[in-house]
Length: 513
Image (cartoon, rainbow, N blue to C red):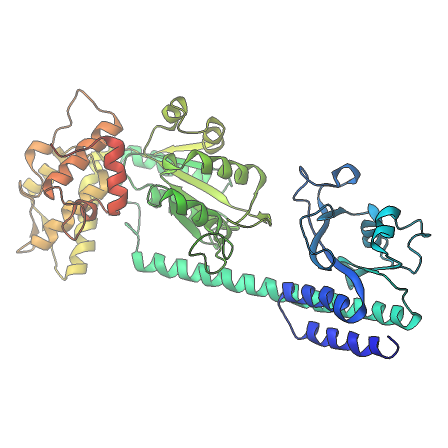
């Protein structure tokens, strides 16, 4: 090897420095040491969080569960990264001691050196020499590089290997920084895409409209809870504006400069919602062509709004509880723990306490969410706000269709006030929008076709939210001749996806008779 090691190390160093992908850098180092420098095997551990403590082979000698060395690359006779030494505690074993002492360990007599244990294993493999180097960048510990050989190191090789370890540290740090920049870039792209989708979709309201006592009381609670980081559970019937109140809380919080990220737990299939919440790694499942950040990552230091939380599957409820308790999660198909500083606002029209009794919702998650319950009054409890809301929607939709309506007919106002509005504000807006489109002059009028008088009463025998929701869904389906999809379908009129409407019909037991 005289004269050869210098050129070999230079070749490895050049290839290593030419890559900005961390896995490629690590593989280049370990495989190069095996192929060009005669190492029986070479390994690199990098510093990481304590993440496998419950199943770690070295847990008995670990003094701290916060950080340890993660085996990231192995070449030669051992290439498995999931073996006994996949995690090495700091300060334990020869690898952990090299990391904490910051000093290399190099010997040409592994059988006579007390620092190198497992003599039987050394004899069986014919190992003669060992070299271990701390990988440092300035004052920061990156990890440890270790080599076993079946022949001794010559003095010039030891000097070059020490220099090579420093070069490897620089290459690893550069790759890690590039990885962080790429991750931030991907996250910004995800956030920009999400925000563009938000802008394109628009929001139901620009402001919360109304002056009634029940609404004023709720707004007082919003002002009280918004500046805190407390979890808020927004309760209310369908169409009461739960998302609007979640946005009001976010906009008045210290997180208002970060995004409000939304997830509708009822609108996504069970197989996709986990990926939507926590993200996924490339190849985690069929169709996962690249790594994707989840909504928790996008909401970091912001607010996450989980609508229809009552529809979340029990398995995902357990994972959500872990994030709320520990502030960390893993992407689907990943093992790296990701920290998440997220303020959670959840919403539901379902009675969660009853779901807990029925075994459909975890009690511990319910108590975790129910820190600050915020009940939104249905429209029938704030009927004095109907004229204000009607005027707001007339102006909003009139400008959209290019009509200038100046008044609302007196009979129409009476009809609006008398109606029970099982679909609440959303139903009111839909009715006003249709009336604006059909208006022939400057006065808004609503007749029996738009709002039949027979629908103005809520049967007194059952005033539960579920019963009213069932009646409303059935009425809309009737008006659409039980057509679900399309511009004139019930899903469009209810402002929801066809798949969501079908799930809702199944849950409510709504069938065409």
